[in-house]
Length: 104
Image (tube, helix red, strand yellow):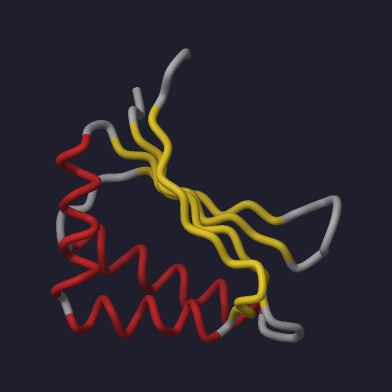
């Protein structure tokens, strides 16, 4: 059962959906190879702005979330892969939030 959820909400830049998806896949493969065992999903809006997306990472415990944050802060290659994801997005509405489960 996932206890923590990290959600990045934003919009994909016009005409850059394929680039965005390739960049997300590369980042997910890299972090998986580094032992990050979170479950990841990308959600695409079907109402509101058509280019709105949520990248969701679910962690079973706080240690896994901290390992992800540490990899993001210290690994240069991972930083480059994440930058490629962000470059395919526009930032006027980007938000990162961390949630914990209260009821399931």
